[in-house]
Length: 319
Image (cartoon, rainbow, N blue to C red; front, side):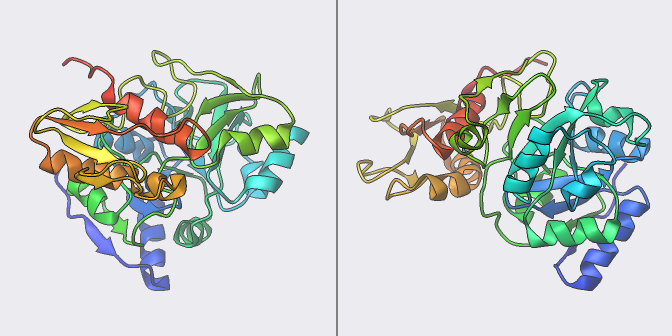
């Protein structure tokens, strides 16, 4: 079904209109500090089903539930003392916690993909927080892009992939972090389920332990675990210091003279993370063959950047 997608700003009237769309079962793209999310009422089966339909997302892939504060999140997830301490330290912010869900909370079973856990996040972006407060309920929101493709960090990216499939987008400009939230499982954990906008080292310091990593590409326990994900149309090569002739080369740091674009000319990982998905899109539009990425250090936000690049470079599913 083709629908007219409205583009809103961020005035109180715009946010109120977007909240009304959510209450009516519609879908709204909105900025978080990480990437733009595609929001729908997490209690409304039809709204959640439309998220999967709009994205072409596999139904076995669970969604993150967004709420304005961790106190309200307790209506949907069971918080241990450890979870409360992490929420107090890192929320609002780019951290998602996977926790046991509260029976009878009213969440659509499609949100959890049949699991006995739920992924919860309290975003820091002021527009996301205003929308969540205005809606006053749980919002299921994966990234606002066709499934498996490059995540959106601008409203134009959302419209390029989902115009005609969703009701509205709130345009709040570019996202500051630029990669999705870090996901920490606390059901049988702690276990790191996805590298993201909060460096794993910060979590390890707070927990006082080295994190193990988990996740299953065949049966994901959290979003972002599929082997092929964040993929442009062009092929992607990694850790390239000498690109092939005609290859579009994305540099990192000051030693990439001649690169077509750079994640960060100075080697700043925060800048690189913020630029990653936008540069992937631009490179995809300009590449005549494949996209080559220079090495990025496997520390801090570099771990999240490399995770996204490895998934972008992975063999694509057939069919």
